[in-house]
Length: 263
Image (cartoon, rainbow, N blue to C red; front, side, top):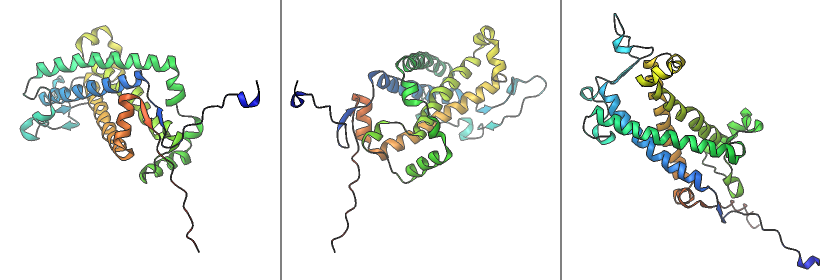
């Protein structure tokens, strides 16, 4: 075969090109996670309204002798109902219905995260895309990324396909800390699981401590959600949402070089 007949290697994608970004599994996980966590948060707020106090330890307000002091007490907010109906499931007061919603979607969340983590391990997604590399953890590198985000300097070209260190730490915190945290602390508050796995109660320092940690992990997810949405809006919502719906993403164009003014 002559040199002229050799195949030309495909050109490397550049800014402005439409490329595949998210796999079907990642997209399914993203939207399942969004629905499940949203329903659990809203039904959880209704459950919290039934007793708007948080404690450390085992007994809380049922402590023998005298109640444990609450580290968070919202019973004086809005006549004892701190979270309004428009943000709770159901919108009317019903602890029983809220628990049904909460537990049903807890199963969906638990099965979804288990399947996604298993796929991520087998496919190499965690090692390839989410695990921080040692140089990325250098304080200078982290600080550089923080400054770029503060100045709204987002990566362009092929660099936009790779997670930066702040994304890796945020997504890793959600996948390996916050979501497992809400699931395990939720199981710890179940009397049935207390009997089956008493180690969980000891692990979290008591059922009331587990309830407090459950609340904190849930609001950690809320904080992540608002930061995530803000970054999506700033980076270009149409392009970002399209990539999570279809998998296709248009690489941001590189800035044009500055031209010197003519003499």
